[in-house]
Image (cartoon, rainbow, N blue to C red; front, side):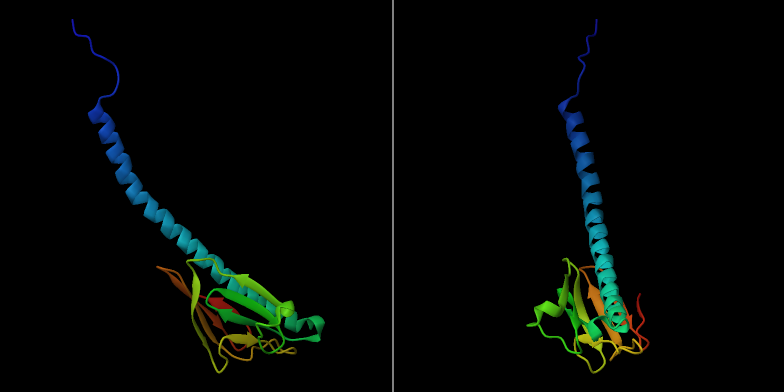
Length: 152
């Protein structure tokens, strides 16, 4: 009479653990890439939103002033007036950029790191691009002469 014991052997448990380990090694890096891509998309949306908000506030003559956007590697600042001052914190609205995304390149014609808008037309004082990058991805935000912005 054969009496088989019910249960799992050590070999079966090792095989299951090995298969789970291989699956985790494949899946976990993909989750990291998905998160990185989402952070990049969120940062691009923040840049576009900040530029649109500064333009809208300028066109509506909020507080009878012009508004602009200052770009730094780790933050975006909407400022009041035609020049950015880090010391004037009362008129600055700061949006921090979440790592691993950052602003890696600012190519604005004759303007350095900021853009402001004309009160009558909403046209920017400069045109150009702002590149937002993460470890594996990058996107370019373009500021056109009409004040319209887009990203690739």
